[in-house]
Image: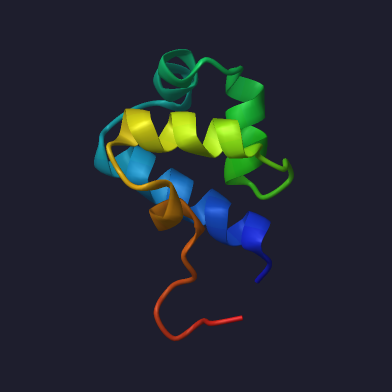
Length: 74
């Protein structure tokens, strides 16, 4: 799995843990819902600024959104 895919899965998991819709998270992070949907699906490249904004809203470290799942190193 590439890093975009890892980011998307981590982003989706954290968003669901917070019980936020894509629309809610997008609004809080200052992006479009379509952008967020594409990022979660691994189709969009998130900028570092957006990774930081999303991590802030989700109350996690930005690196947490970029970590490969245990046992799935690069």
